[in-house]
Image (tube, rainbow over all chains, first blue to last red; front, side):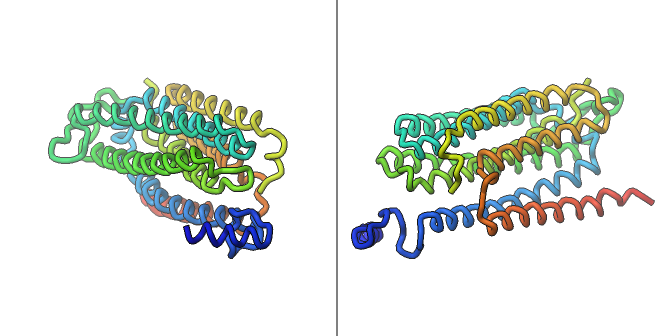
Length: 237
Length: 97
């Protein structure tokens, strides 16, 4: 409230856009600052996921056959469907930003709702996958079981359950952290939807939408790599 | 922030979306074809093309004028490269005697 009164007074005194905070010289500088800060945050996220990808690559190289056998037990069709769902949600995010830039309120609200529906669909499909893994005792821990599972391409050899367990540990940590990012994204988009509903976004000011969009696209990119690395190690018969 | 928002970017958004879906379909189908060691290569090349499409067109890196922003993005990729390539140069070659 204090901020808005200051901004309003500032705006009235100098004829500025009320969305321009007093410590920025121009609207472009304000937008660039937000964008730079968001990209620096995404850089820390890249390094955060990068460590997990590095661990994955090392173990995959050491225990390739066991990883291939474990990977084959995951439902690749569900994984591919989820990839398509996330790609559609990224499209609705750019449509939402375009709608704000061109003052299309119905399209803006509709795109945000669709984005969240796609996000929820993704999490639902993820839940089905996790349920299958629990039922098959593929969750690392005391009840883990991966006995007599043949190695792809070597029907007479069985995967080492200890090595397969490492694959599933990486699978649950990487997809679990990704799903946590999706849940946080849904929270962000709930807030964006409320702001959009109140008419806070204009062609001049819709920075929160653009920053939320950057986050959502980043989470999409992480999945674009997770899908082939976890689901498609060695699928051919 | 960018000039291309003045003309309608919708065609570009839908083209990128279609390309991403086609890339996903090819990745999925190619995984079931026997390509030997190239299976992983094909999957990762398509994934990288898809990631670049998202970053350049959906995240608007193409047309970004701010040099500081470019520096952040390039150094992110550079440090990820150090993390993955130097680690694999060690672990990947330990079996060589």
